[in-house]
Image 1 (spheres, rainbow, N blue to C red):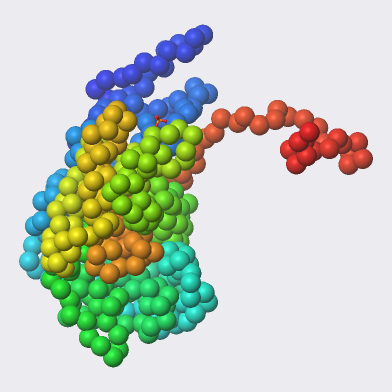
Image 2: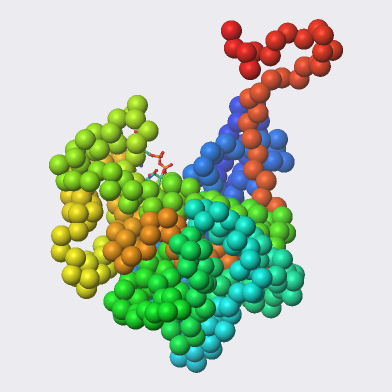
Length: 441
Ligand code: CMC
C-alpha cells in the first residue's frame, strides 16, 4: 500500500480554488480518492450505503466483484475451501498466513481447549422462551460473555485480544448448539475434544446423553466448507457494525453482539433462512414463473432471496464451491429427488437466462445453495443464520483486532445531510397549533 501520493484528484467547486485530493492505491483494486482533507474546506460527501466509501485500510480480504474474485490474505477462496480446513482458515485470517504442521497442531489444541462455557451461562438460556429465535438467544448470550471474562477485556493488550479471539472461535459452536438444544427441550451436550471443529458442532447438535451420534465425514466436510466460505467478506454490514461498535472502545463481546444483530437481517445473513422459506413457498417448478414476475415487479417488495449481491456483479465465487458441495451431500444422503433442489436448480436456470436478471447482474449468491445443504443435513431453518454467525466470528474478530492495531483508527462517526425543520422557537403550550405529524388533516 502506497500512501505517497503519486497522483492527485482535483475537485472543482464554483467560487473556490481547486481542492487537490491525494489518490491512494492498495495492493489490488482501484485507486481511491482520499477525501479526509475535505472537512477542512467546509465540505463532506454524501454516500448512503457506503457504496463509494472505504472506511479503513485492511490486509485481510480482497473482493473483485466484477470478476467474481474472493481472496483471504491473498489466497483464492476455492483453493482454501478444497485444500484447507476451517481452523487453518481461522489461523490464516487471524495471523496473516497459513499455519505449518506444528502451528496448526498448537492452534487446534488451543481452540479445542476453550470450547467449554462457564456453567453459569447455562442458566442464562432459561431466561429465554423455548420458542425464541436462536439468533435472539445468540445476540443476548454473546453480549453477556463480557460478564464472564474479566481477565481479557483490556482491548489495548495484544495478548488479551488474542485470548478473546480464541475463546470466541472456540465457544461459538458450543453456544450455537446450546441455543438449538434449548429450543427443542433437550439437554445441552458438552464439546468433545476428539472431534474436529465441524464434527464437534454436529455432535453437540445431534447427539443426546442417551445416544451417540456418528459423524458422517461427507457431512462434516460440507459443514466445514460452509464455515470456510462464510469466514470473512471484508467490510460487509455485520463486520462494519463490529468495527463501528469497537471504534468507541467497546469490549469485544459487545462488538460481536453488534455483528450478530446486523447479520440477522434478511438482506445479509438472514438470507439463507429467507431463501429456504422462499423455495418452500414456491413449492413446485411450475410456480417459478409467477415468482420471477413478482421479483421483477417494482410495485411488489418480493425479491428472489439468494440472488444478487452488493459487490458481486458476476457469479459469487462462494456459490460455485457451494453448488458442488450441495451435489456431494445430496448424493451421499441418496437424495435424488429433492423437491427444493429441483425448484432451486430450475430457478437458477430461469433467472440466469432472464433479461431482468442479466441486466441487473443478479447471480445466485452463496446462501442460495448453503440453505439447501443445511436443510439436507438436518439443520433446522431457524439455525441457518446462527451457523453463518458461527463461521463469521473469526472474520469479525480479525477485523476487530486489525482495527485496534491500526493507529489511523478513529471513532466511527458518519455525517448527514440535515433535511428537517430550520431553527424555530418553542411557543407556550396554550399557543401551539395541533401537531400535524400526529394529526394529518
Ligand atoms: N431480486 C430481484 N431484484 C433484485 C434483487 C433480487 N434478489 N436484488 C437486487 N434487485 C434489483 C433491485 O430491485 C434494483 O433494481 P432497480 O435498479 O431496477 O431499482 C437493483 O437490482 C439493485 O438492487 P439494490 O437493492 O440497489 O442492490 P444492493 O446492492 O443495495 O443490494 C442485496 C444487494 C444483496 C441486498 C440485494 O441484492 C438483495 O436484497 N438480495 C436478496 C437477499 C440476499 O440474497 N442477500 C444475501 C447476500 S449474500 C450473503 C451476505 O454476504 O450477506
